[in-house]
Amino acid sequence: MSEPARDDRLLAWGLATFHAAGFVLLLVTLLHVAGGLGSALGSLNTVVGLGLYAVLWVTAWWAARQAVRGLRLAEPDRPIAGWELLGRGFLWGGVNGAVFWLVLLALLVIQSLAGGTTRDPVSLGLALVSFLVLFLGIGVGVAFAVGGLVGLLFATVDWTALALAHALWRAGAAGQWTEPAVPARAGEGDGHGSVS
Amino acid sequence: MPHLDPHLLGPLIRWLHVAAMAGLLGGAILVWAIARSPRSPGAVGPDDPLLVAARAYEWLFWAALGALVMTGVGNLGAFGPALPGRETAWGGALAVKLAAVGAFTLVSLVRTLLVAGLGAARPAALSAAHRRLLRGGYAGTALAAAAVLAVAVSLAHGGGAR
Image (cartoon, rainbow over all chains, first blue to last red; front, side, top):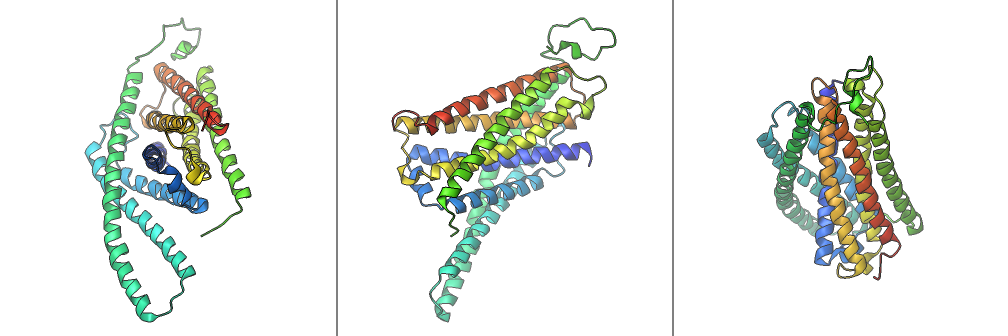
């Protein structure tokens, strides 16, 4: 694997976990401040909650890898493709939202099928049509829009963080923050002598 | 829905939470110590032990942070509706912890992007200034993690009147 590809993978891993963990942290903080955290968490099965977080983490990683592919964002000596990042953030954030919604829906369907009592074909047909229209059609659209907006928000934060990291790299490469020069010993001329 | 024995699940979640924090904090101290130690002659560019350790730590850091958030929410879920509100001393401390973790996560993203940049830049040699920057970054990471840990320990032991 080439060096830039390796560092792009690290970048995607960091961004993806930042997105998943940041999103959950934001939700939990808002709920806590609003006073509804205890009841919201109390209504959620622990195993299901952990599983949904894991799904969000995996889909966020996949989406982040797609979003940064080819942009070479890790390379600090290149200009940041910020507007491209924003566009892809919206697109892949939306896809992530839709995929997460579909996984959630699949879990609900499995649960209702496992605990279902009706065998009436008409009721089953009506339930299927309303499921397709409401949850698959409208639900996926709403999930895409919400995911896209969240993705856009996080892409803005990513752009800012990248700009900061690149500025730090440039300042370091330009020799800023160097410590007072220490006379180099014989055979030591690489600047290492400044390390305390 | 899946149902596991809470007597097994609770300790498992808490164990993972503590293990993730230990890795995050211990790893930051280790990379800081590497950044302080003299560089071996010839170990430059991508082979620089500091860059190798920093890159490995960044992978571990985000795995640990993701696990910490996941298990942290799981720990809060164990309270259910009995979770103290933000108007209580405990709830106020929790709000402080959540805000601190959010800020820590944001600043850590910049550190990770810097490490990725140091590996991807051409040439990939670390200047003395870069080394000093990383040393400060990992010292700050360890201190911030220790501060969050102190609040977490306080919360786990009651953290004032509920």
